[in-house]
Length: 264
Length: 336
Image (cartoon, rainbow over all chains, first blue to last red):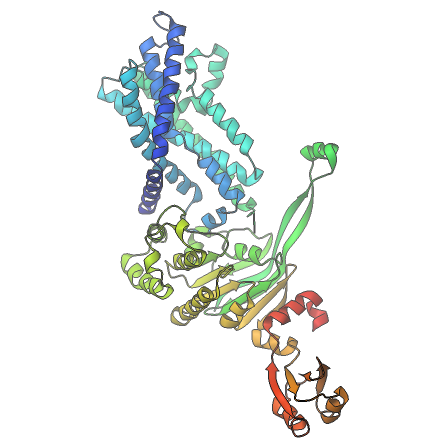
């Protein structure tokens, strides 16, 4: 069984490679984004030593790593699913002896690995040339960060799969997918670290899965967490990975029964 | 031993209606009106192992819906299905390993990558061993003549080339049962012939059971002894193709052209004792419709030829196409 999923990852990787030129422009766009946030935060700090638990250089690192990590965990699996359901291609997926959601997850992973190698890593190196980033010094932090990043990929992909499966019931959920995208970017701490939100908002956001996508790994990488906090952060991520499986599984069972193949 | 057993199979869809105007649209936000449409209405049939069955019907008769239930894609509203001894929807993942499916209107190959990459992936998906793949697929690739297409991306293939690759892709795991949903749609005659030849050979060699839906009845004539005809979700005919032709074909007819002008009365007088109805096309050309299957054409000729000089003589048989067309137009019972 695993060899089939490896093959899925490989094929998606090949497909991405065929269109790799698209990604060079992406790196520039992300770098500009990071630059804009750098200057914005520079102005906000204006010489202050620490805000929201982050020093200016930690903040720069947080912004850079968050965007580059986004390149890895972000995927359009929900859109692909919506499209397959809309034009009836999902029928083909249902005659195959595999789990549709697992396959989608693997395709997302193939895409993620591609982006990690061809986007995030070179992007991070380029950005480091222009802005004063501080990379973690201890190998342990790198290790924890890798674990955390892998978990953030899982959580984000599970959320995407849930959004995608909703198409089985709604048939058209373009609006929902857009809303999800904004919500994830905003509440995950990509645009604003969670520690900058007002207290009441923080307490709500701590109960949502989104902070586990970007805020927690970002804080680990920026060196703003002690060892104990890192352990807690990874535990929260693990809990979300498991908790999100439940609605996904239940919805999938319902979806299979509700399936309507559109377009003949 | 049956490959497919279907009993009282029914599938209903909700079909939503939109109310008129702005106020209607606002009301639609809260409660929506719908009709229940019965796409498939209590059908039962069995298919034996190794049989090739044609499943025909007009657009919207419920053919595709039936196929989708038989392949485990859709869940039946009621009734029972056993295909290869399994319930397709409940045991989907185990079940689909035992079937091959070709949807003429949808590709199951990956659009952007070479055909052989798709095959390789499917080989892994169906857990086909290297030896099995070598012996079986080698033959399939050879007969379908797709050797040269394997390293091309699917998007660069013509429809005929793609269909042959689709067929090969559906057979990677050498399934005992093959569903073909309009496999020859939009193909030219040569490709059609090749595909038919291939299916025949497949059936002869591996005893593959085939259920075929098509609008091209020549496909059915070439491949199937048995047809199941569907109309408005119900089976209206299930039996031998030959029998359908004999009972509803309206018998044979013969077109006769004479060397000089003839009156219709002259002919009826000559053949008055035979079960023949004459139709006149023009003063020289007539059509004799044989109203009994026992009657032979030579009897007809024996009566006519000694008295009137015959210039040309052609036996006409009603095509299956015409029979089916008539059944659709007039309804099965009235036509029968």
